[in-house]
Image 1 (spheres, rainbow, N blue to C red):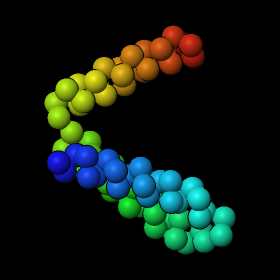
Image 2: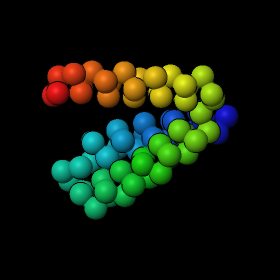
Image 3: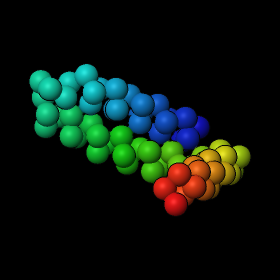
Image 4: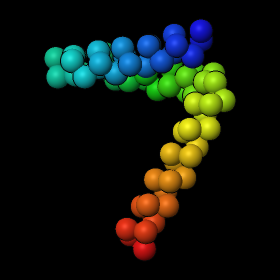
Length: 70
């Protein structure tokens, strides 16, 4: 349950930051810091299947970037 709560908080704070970024830049920075903190909590509390999928995606993207640039 912590995973879903943190994920919803991350998405909500990122959307709020995007919508109010030009009018209230200080509040947008605060929303981004909340989003980053909630993202860390999301990644730590994620089920092992999701963590494994993220590791596989990171390795695949790293290899594909090295083929293009190297």
